[in-house]
Amino acid sequence: MPSADDRQPPPLKLEEDDALAVLVGTAMWAVGLIVLLALAAFDLVEVRGWWIGTCSYGVGLGLCGAFYLRRRQASLSRHPAA
Image 1: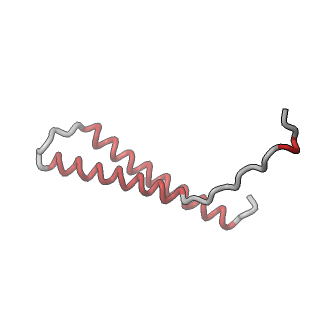
Image 2: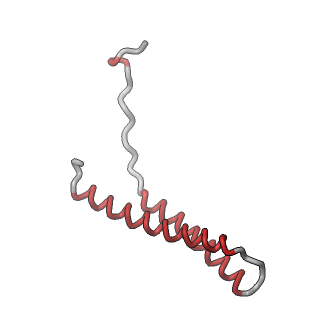
């Protein structure tokens, strides 16, 4: 059994931009929504309504997530000890 002295220190926290990742995902949902709306508008393909709804929810939830993460990051930068 390794003792407490033999343990390695925990890894350093990675600095990542969560909001950027959420915005990229949201942009992908938006592209999908635009493509589906264009296909439906020109009657090129029969587009099911739930496909458009799924993309719409993806965009909406992504924007909510990006807003939340931006506010969280601003709060953490104001109070770095928390």
